[in-house]
Image (cartoon, rainbow, N blue to C red; front, side):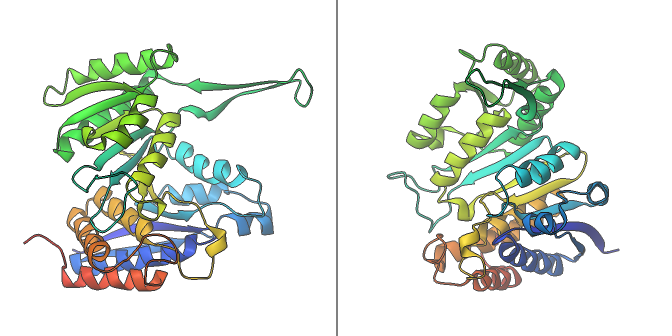
Length: 360
């Protein structure tokens, strides 16, 4: 019997719908080639919906999303909506309500893509960041005292639970083992200053490490991690870290892998529904110009396919992307690709159908 997957589609704002369209083309091509079906349900939430209705993320939609096999998200952010409203009301709300406690960010330089790092090649830049995605500073614990006065106090608390920390660390060890490359897991923290939170992280890390004797472990402060990501990215295999530090170092990772146009990520609940997205913003200045790079959204579909168990289909997407970046696309920046947004999607679809770049 042909497998069928229920996929929720959230096109988002700005250029989000444009890149999502290309990702959907690719998903459909992979499904056709590998004999499974996709039932797509689109939810037009985002800035336009909020401005029109005052709603951000209705509870009924969360309930519906919870029944899906995966969520494919474009980008959230509207120039007429104050920053933070949509991001917290949609992105963080979905991550927290659906317990997507892992943010998975491959940082991989592909042949044909330029990196700002001198003399570094695809062999040097190929690692993954596992970011805790449901705790830390992002839970919104804190508040104000005497707001708007000269004596104002603002408090933001980082919440770290043993359960939350350990399950993230354990996922990272399992992922490192499955990835089966250097089999090295690095804990990124700040134990010399954040002595409570990262004491918990460090203790949990080395306790769990005893169950994984095949994985080499080490530790680096977050500032040193940033330094070595630039100087010696080849040192890293898998990095595990908290919510805030993960947010920061993955943006640095996007730059060293060539830019936001090729950076994809997953918000993972290993026991539930996961959400996949290009990590760049909605880029409203490019809306309707059809020049935005859809590769990040297409690589997000690769992560989606791998996560729902269609690994061969996911590998075919990456193989097609590799060929297009190596042989066709001149520059990954918007408007400089040598192709329109839709043409890039068509190119990837053709390569999937041809089996281009796949191992035999």
